[in-house]
Length: 278
Figure 1 (cartoon, rainbow, N blue to C red):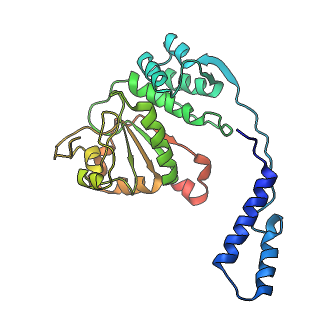
Figure 2 (cartoon, rainbow, N blue to C red; figure 1 turned 180 degrees about the vertical axis):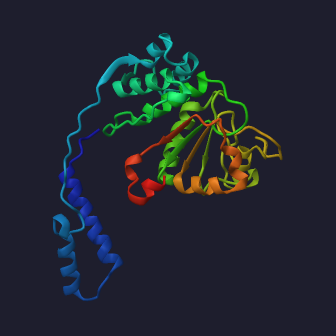
Figure 3 (cartoon, helix red, strand yellow; figure 1 turned 60 degrees about the horizontal axis):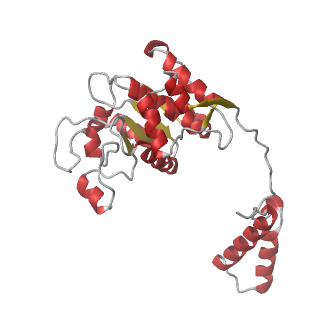
């Protein structure tokens, strides 16, 4: 792979944006076009493309431990460790970061009545997602489901794009097993099987719920009507949809004493009144 030339890239990006802008806001006056083009080409805050900023980021500290070693020490579910290695999600040769191991241990060592709130901050590529997914999945695999229905873990995001990214990761991690299931609930999620079929979505599977009605227990995996079906273990959604769900009687089935973990990913994006409400 050739090395990225940031300076050249900025020049190319500036030229393309100026060309696009002058085409979309075309003027028949050549003097005006030239003045606008020169203004947009300027560097810094006066132009369309700002200055380049370089930020140094230290690598996260390695723990020297693999997930396989944690499983052998009885600190992580052995079957789950093997499955994650088979899917390539967390292979046996990957060494975990210190904050990932600390999250796994802190969540596993605590009881329901004294489980701490865990906050993880790390740079880009620092394994923040693994810091909550691994403890949550370990908890779901090692702890029996409490009586009654409802979800066991809620993963909350500030926007749909981030929900979709997490869904892709969960699909890779959980496909091919039936111990843990997930469901993503956004405005794009189909209500019934016929809607999912029209959208050409993949069929439901042991690890993945397909429609809102299936997740509510009102529809089977085959799309036929059902009553009292189970809810997914993990619900991935955004704060706007969560607010709707908490107000709608048909979605009350998701929330019960079975809930064991709440995850706020990308929490730094919340601020002001929104953060206070969440």
